[in-house]
Length: 112
Length: 112
Image 1 (cartoon, helix red, strand yellow):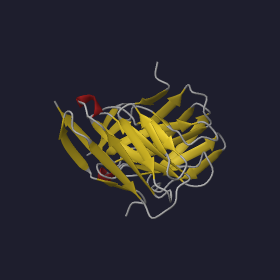
Image 2: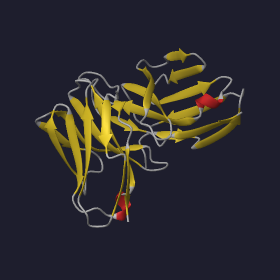
Image 3: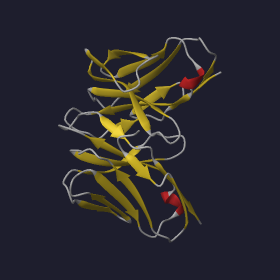
């Protein structure tokens, strides 16, 4: 079984719709991250959480919000999706005190 | 502009050839990681380098961290089709466990 899971794997939606992407992990890590990936731009950090009560904005948080429901769950929401939010979205986890991050399989989101 | 610049962006070679991917920055990093990503999957960590001048070998892959800890390279000897993928460098600044900054990635295609 995968240690970091993301749902859905693919989603097509329309401009203005509210979308939630979910991430769950069984690794027992405190730290969780949301990234988006666009061709040639690598991974850019949207939000990160170092524990359940700690939520921080990343470099591109505008238009996104997150919820850390439990140590194992971290959700990303697009309140009103727009076409330039079309991208691959990845969730990642890391143990406290280590830089290595473990990634989920990604969600491909298309906003029409 | 990205904090970490990778070059080249794309590399296509024949099986058996050697290749080098570069990751450069004007900033100093406390550690640098290399990840490989295959289509439909999230990035997977290959190596972490932490000491200036450090060289690590992983079978046919050689990773080097610059003396000033601002740059890194990945060299693959006798590339195989299984080496095909997107290679990403990621730097951490400060204490272990801080968030990562990713380069734009180098897409490598090894043709049989």
